[in-house]
Figure 1: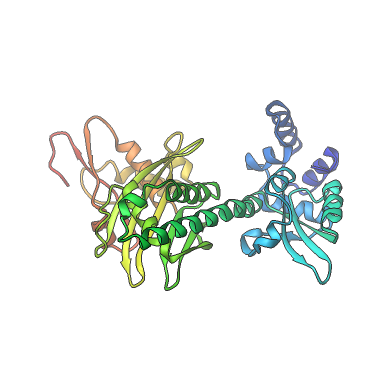
Figure 2: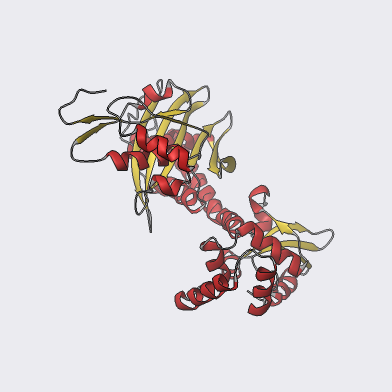
Amino acid sequence: MHIPEQILKKLLLDSHILTEEQFNSAKEEAKRSDRKLENILMGRGDVPENFFVELLAQHFDVPVIDLKNVTIPSQTLNLVSENFAKEKEIVVFDFNEEKRIAKVAMLDPGDLDTIEFLKNKLGVEIAPFITFPSSLKYALQHYELQLSGEFSKAIEASVERARSGGELDLAKMAKEVQIIHLVARLIENAIALNASDIHFEPRTNDLLVRYRIEGVLREILKIPKIVHPLLVARVKILANLQIDEHRIPQDGRMRYEGADQTIDIRIAIMPTMHGEKVEMRLLKEASRPISLHELGFLPENLKIIEEEIKKTQGMILTTGPTGAGKTTTLYAVLHILNRPSVNIVTVPRGFAQSYGRTRTLSWWVKSGTQKR
């Protein structure tokens, strides 16, 4: 970052957000791991991302922009190449040809060389904005989504050719390379954006793809309606569901092996007026089980939970909105109960759904006792 280390240190210490000892510790870790100091500070939680960006915005005297709330036209995004945008950590999110000005979101608004380069390349004035790392990451995924759109157009052409030759064979076409790549790319993009859910929502004239990010559903991509049956068929194959069943809901699951992590995906398919709707819940496989102590329960509440799970009968319910931590909490409890003397049986999802947005903790049976 184009800000002297001593100035950055003074800004942070004057804000009383961290101590000099914490700063020096982060500096040593950055040097040892060959990473940026600001990434270490935010990654360790010493300085919240929002606070850090606001502090730099005041120093550089530039506005803050959250790209998650901005719709970026494709022609604006493509004013600079994907490689350049990723290398310089910038995104052109608004271009006014009449006023001859381009708005650019940057992690480092002090990078005057990049600003000057863009000014000469685009032939307009550059208005720099500072943005959050997670916000920039979200915007950079638009390049990947454009490629997904190109895949869907190629699939559309394939479907049209197949239709002209007779009836569609969904099972066969769902195994073609293009549809395989499209589904894989949509899942990979969701993982990269740290989304908790993927929604495929059929409408009258198209298929809408939405991701739930930080608890909010965001429109990601529109796909030609003709591709919808193949997309659903591909998901059904991955989840071992019935391809030829379209009248009743189906539930399944699959495991996706990413580049650096494994994702468990719960899949729910439901018939609607415009076709089958698909909801995919992404569950990251943690490197180790999270304990109840790490989940932030108040001491008195933690004591109640620990006492209740030791009882030989009863039921524990966890409730809350999407992303509240219901599943994580249940996994933490089950990790405590998972002993050789205990038999754990999962209650079917349909039973749990009858309680609204409630997850029912698995029943457990101790050796020699009756099922509860």
